[in-house]
Image (cartoon, rainbow, N blue to C red; front, side):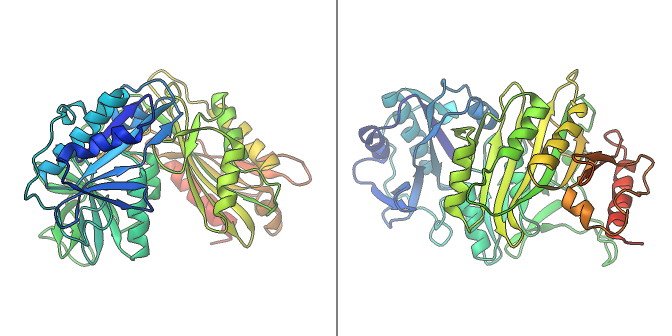
Length: 474
């Protein structure tokens, strides 16, 4: 049974409806708060949380419930209220379901998943105890060791929710890894994939045959000494670990015609109070799709309509601390970007990872890539940009099976970087095609075509040769 239950309502849950939901365990159930009151908790007799309820979130972006839950959503705007049950306590799961069912009934709306929110009756919880602290210290953390924090997620797509963002930040502050455990059918949002640090952080997928495996590499895993680690083959040596790969990771590897256009770039802006952030991303989005992004947020679901002013205001308020954002497109043209804005000695940096999805028969607009690169180079302080084409899902979610690497389609070097290179190194490359100047002739950026088809690794060989050349390596 799922550990997360979500109410989707047309109206904001009022205090009386929230109280009615919290009474799902009866009038004697203890109530506590976390996060300066942003999280309300139903607790056992020792004060340990059974259910944690996040503050309602107003979603003004169409398609987010469908993208993340596979659910039919109310017309925007609507309210998204999450309740997370403590893992391993059946009554806690029932409490979360009853809370969401009561909320949806009283305010008007639906609950996800429907099977978890079918009863309005009081749940009998006499004598029920939650997991002791410190594992319950963070609402999203199910197991805590001296090496990792483990989060168990049973939902169609693991998203960068407020829960998960807090758990990731708390684990980093404690110098711990974060390991996300999911059933076999779960996928990752690109926002989670792009934000998950390296080892010991990993995505752990449950598997009937192999037990557990890494959803990104396929390596078979086992729980050992307080964390999930790779299983070594009997023939392994220090030089050749021979980590076995799960059969499930290698199944259904076929080309179904779906593609992704993946773009990553960095822009470094002069520090200026008049600086408007997000303009570079909007420019790329318009060149590729013909329209601006649909929405953005500091977590998923992305809940705010796209606004350069609001993006700039949030980053300015958080400075000098970095700001992380997720930006999404419409259901008709799937697009998702993660943006990190940070202040450095060089100025204000925007690091962006962006992807658009295309189905069978839909043409990937590669002819718009150069135009997007030129806009970035001329107007948005581009430092560098890499464009790839991938054989991957149109909906952009990351499945727990092998997806081949993207193939570099183009690389762009910003005007300042071209100017800083000695001689004509930037223009004289080992590639068969010469770079194309972008922008003013006296101070151009350079666009390097790297033609290749998905699955053809020669594109990476060309890219590596280019980078070695630009760095002056032998």
